[in-house]
Length: 83
Image (tube, rainbow, N blue to C red):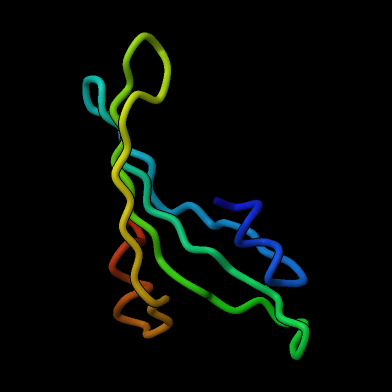
């Protein structure tokens, strides 16, 4: 997915905010940041959420969902752990 999406942008990088494992499932939350031809500044493209089932130490089944990137302060603070 990263390779195909990356063809549309000058630069693209994922930023992971959560990786949680429980039993044989892994939950991942990340944002793709992109650099366009028009701007060299990285901008958030979309937030992704995925759940993966692990079987025999391999990715067996996955579900992925995305939504437009939320740059609002409330959205950013929603996944930052309190110290």
